[in-house]
Length: 107
Ligand code: FES
Image (cartoon, rainbow, N blue to C red; front, side, top):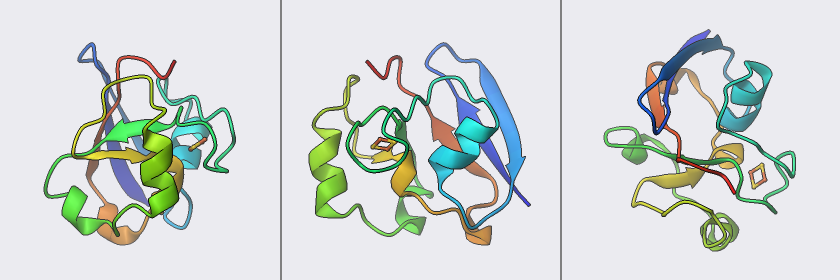
């Protein structure tokens, strides 16, 4: 199991324990993390799974593929250098302790 800490725009936090081998979006939705809507279910067509990461986590992930970067243009909240779509982040043991910031809104 790995631990992931979510920080909402209002400063409230939620920490979950989850298994690697799935997307960050799925782990968050299954744990009922408020602030990740994931309307398309992970098919990279909605941008409502937008999250922001900071270093060192940004550098520990493979870079976003072009389709993910394109879809981030449709994110409701401002996109930051560490913005990603959580359905495209595969959880691995190396991501234990990951800190994820959530945007103020997904719509
Ligand atoms: S869940 Fe729709 S783009 Fe990630």
